[in-house]
Length: 125
Length: 154
Image 1 (cartoon, each protein chain N blue to C red):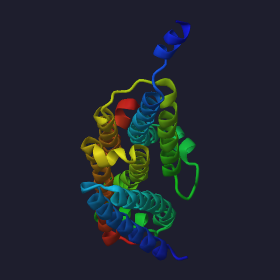
Image 2 (image 1 turned 180 degrees about the vertical axis):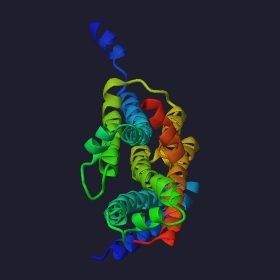
Image 3 (image 1 turned 180 degrees about the horizontal axis):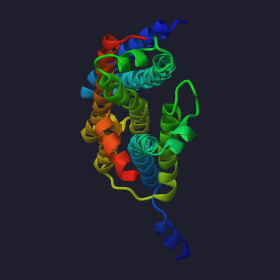
Image 4 (image 1 turned 60 degrees about the horizontal axis):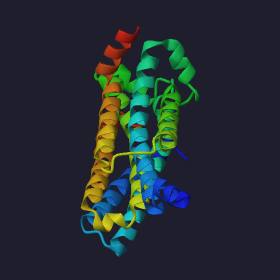
């Protein structure tokens, strides 16, 4: 009886492996979108606050671009790595995560488009 | 190596990226075991070339934005169309930085889904969307790069 209850509570190995794989894939999609938004966000912050621009200048030759891109990638990588750790159950369909990535890419692109960047920087100041 | 050579390598690698996209997309349309193997190679070439494009482009960018009167940025800002730097170059340098992430995602997907790509059309469609996203953002950076280079080369 005891053995029966334990067997029922544990999903089959293949199912567990697919759930884990689904969470890894969802995390990668979310991380890609977050990386783009984070790069855009750091770009806007650097435009709004000279101190942030100076902080993001990790390489004098490259300028603040170095910090914006590096920290943007780190943000995306953190989301991609931590997502499967905290989220175990994900939808079977990858389409919601594709939308997350595409929305992130479009938002990130808008945030690095100078007229939008300057408007957002003015709002933040 | 001279800055011009870095810029040339940067553009050449972008062409490699676009070619590997074409090859990979053809393999995605009718996927079987041999084509899945070629798809993995094609997407890996896309990812490696996109990171190499970013590295060479970032190195060439040092010469582009050098704080001297002869640098391309200084010449553009002093010329009749400073918006080429303040709008187009800003857009180009960041949209180009998005592409390696999307290309890396495509590699993760093809190795993660593996044989399921042969049997499940919906996964092939998702991978196709990711590949097209990488392609569109590359074309944006590629086109802007060509226009900026025409205005003032490094």
